[in-house]
Image (cartoon, rainbow, N blue to C red; front, top):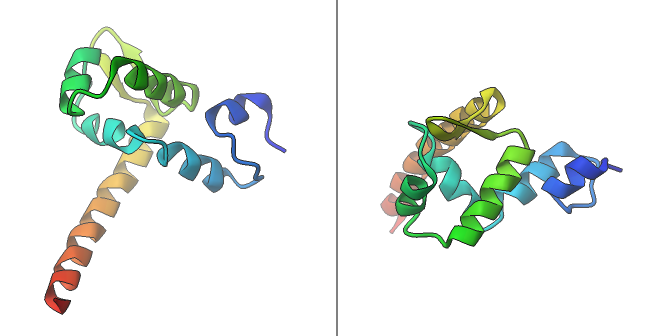
Length: 110
């Protein structure tokens, strides 16, 4: 069973880290926050604006969860990826590339 620090990141009852990650990424707005941080660090307000004016309370919650998970951090320049977060961000970009190809294939079938 995961320790308490991991359960605070994800309430999933699994011994598989991928399940914890998928639960975290599946929370509303989490992927959007990560996507908007892919190119640069952003202040809270800039990130909120990029996320179509997500409510401040939800954004605060997501940022806290992502910081607890060591995916993002905050410094004088704003919120941005940690080293681990950068690796996840690269995977999100790969997923974006795959989604573009998939979209073309799906459109060809219509």
